[in-house]
Image (cartoon, rainbow, N blue to C red; front, side):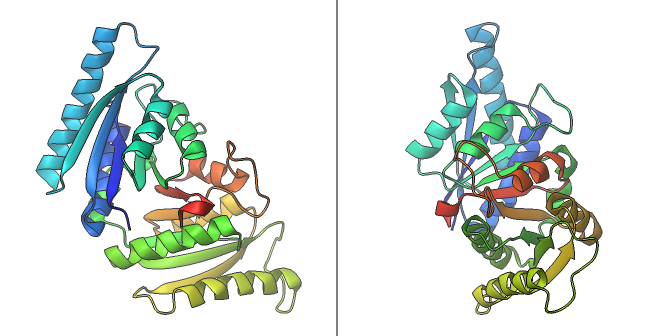
Length: 277
């Protein structure tokens, strides 16, 4: 599944939290861990930038050694952080990138860290984005995984990742389809409801021979709000979703639902591009 997991770090608590979440998956799938820190172009001096990057790497190396038996490969790169991360991932056959959503500069809750956002938009690999509210929650493991779907190819790719992770971690999968613009569920026989049921049945068939407990849900409302409310109501530990839904979108942009969930979710979000299934 995932053989090599990359954890970029800038030494922030968010990066450390991401590393802990990455270790949960690395242990489950028996993956090696790669740690990268980038001495960015806008740092005050090159010497200071390198010192900060080396310190950030050392912290994660120590954490990984103390909390797992995973092999760890480290690298210090220079230049634009998101470009260096994407380049390293490509050159080292990385299967999953795990990042905090907020770096040393912080940023308000409604914004993603710019480096994380760019990596998610441009990466060929799945990216697990870990928000501040998920700090510490990885110690309880992933028991409940939510897979929102609209039946699009991007969502279908994310379904496969969600089911595969659940198999390895012994987690239950909740599959959710939101019917947008409805105050209540349409009656049985309504085309919108029938379509949602067909989407969920296709997921159930996909998981029929897999060793996972899977339940399906149809709920009305604005998709990102439905997803976030479901996360809170059901104690979801991980969301897996495609970077693009039915509306499609250019490669360098995210689908609007995915982007809103990334900006507001309290749970880690694994984003999957259609061709990474």
